[in-house]
Length: 258
Image (tube, rainbow, N blue to C red; front, side):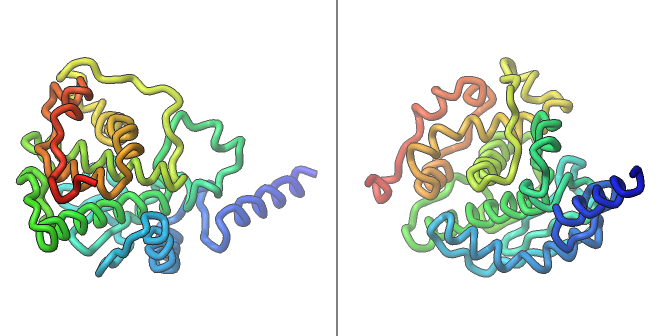
C-alpha cells in the first residue's frame, strides 16, 4: 500500500507541472529553461491581450543569474531594455501558481516565486519602458529623470522612490494576472527606518509598493496611470509613508487629460 501511495503521489506531482521536471516538488534548472523557451512567445501574446496593447521587440531568455554582478538574492528575473532574463536557479515554488493544489497554496503566507509570474513581472518592466519611450517620442511628454527609460542602471539609495514605483507597478500586474499569492496581512512601514531596513526590502519593494499603487491604478487604468507616474517625480520616503501626500501632488500631462 505504501509503495502504491508513493507512485500515486509521483504521478500527481508530474501532472501538476505538465511535462516540466520537478525535484523535491519544485522546478529544476533544466525545467525552468524548457518552460521559458516553450512559453515565452505565447505569454507575450497573452500579456498583450490582457493590457490591450502591443509589446515591441522583447526577447525572454533563461540563464543562471545568481552570480551575476548587481543581482540580489530576492531577484529571480532581470530586465534590460528589450531583453528579459529568468533565473534558472532552483528557488521557484512552481512553474505556475495553478500547479499548486489548494492544500499547497494554503501553506504560503505569500509568494511570487513562480516562473510564469516572474516572466509577467519582467514583461511589465519592459511595457513600462515602452510606455515611457512612446510618451517622449510620440507625445513629446517629458519623463521625470528619476525614471531611466530605455537605460539600465543598478538600483541604489538615490533612486529608492523610482525603484519602489517600478517594482510596485510590476507586482500589481502580476497580481492582476493571477500569478502570485498576495500577503494575507501586511506590516505597513511607519518610519523611514522601516523602509530602509535590509530585512524589510522584499516586503517594501514588492508587496507594500503594489498595495501603495493599487487604488490609483485601479482608478486610472493601467497605461494612463503609468504615464502619470512616469511624468511626475517619484515619491520621497515621507510620501511613501503617507501615500495621500504623493497622490495629491501628481499632475496629469495636458495631452492625457481625458
